[in-house]
Image 1 (spheres, rainbow, N blue to C red):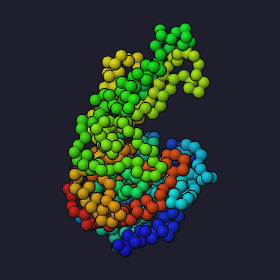
Image 2 (image 1 turned 45 degrees about the horizontal axis):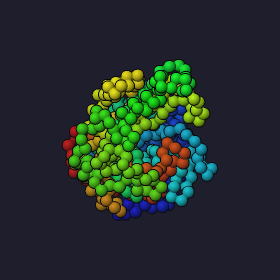
Image 3 (image 1 turned 60 degrees about the vertical axis):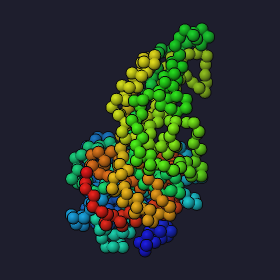
Image 4 (image 1 turned 90 degrees about the horizontal axis):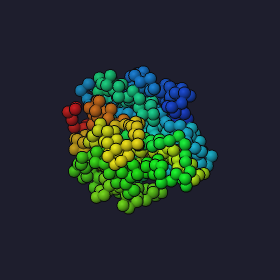
Length: 458
């Protein structure tokens, strides 16, 4: 327990806050040229020294994708016979989307009660700092880790991780390990320590009903000219009805596995003060809220456009468009989805709706019954204040498939954030109590890893 007390004291002393302030000050926005300069500085001035201090040999690698930034890999080999842990984080953050409150800014860490405000505090600088700190505390306490360590940082997660899949395929030997332990995304809620095993995927559909270049007076032409907005809403309703229920079987997974159902049994969602209240009667019937969010597929309308809703005129618009997103779980037959949508719309009498598919990322998860899952949950439950929630995957997207499908690893994600952290928005923040507990949990998990039961690599 002395080591865990050191972890608590590290947060209570203000040391973690001071370190995080340094990280936040780098405006590492991956979709801006000036951000690329800051990313390089962050790799050179922050991450390389942090990994070197852990006894890692650090190398930087060019991205095989022109749109992506470099990769940073740190490797510490204590004994080839010891188990090898792979960790992951991303150095980049999103750009700005509005004004921050109370005079706060994105690049200055500001404390207000338990909230530490700044861009990257939750996604992902605060999270990978917690893991780096846990490893540093363990090394200082023991004089060794008791295992081999590899740490991979990418610099383009916020723009879809370009080149990461190719890089992992090219560098399988460099990244070979027994298991991945990483931190990103949110917990189940602020109060509940959580372990999740993967991520849902996503596919975007643009529906375009472009019927004519001009708008025509609704009194003179209503009833004889097809209205693209009416057509579009009818097409959408044939895909997902007004109660959020997906109408096309090909857009759904074949089943909800019993192991997933058992893992989600009894979990409550939206359990943090200030969370929106889930709507009764919304979404797939017969499923709990946790099952709909973490175990099933949803089709959401992200944007609609026809005419000018702020200054409508008495005219039938010539064009209407919508962007939809399918969030899907592992097991969904993704390859057949684009054709299934087009064929469905044609069969429903909407051949004039043009469908464009793009902007996807893949779903993947480690099986709940994988031995590494039971080991990790048991290790965390020993030190957590309450039983750790086990999610087969979280609701958002991460490049988890790179580790499961390309590198063949079991993946264990220990998030140090919560759903209300406002990531990607003004006033992104890290909760101090979550950071404190997260450092304790990460330290305990890494400490237990050296004596983890041997598990055959996939």
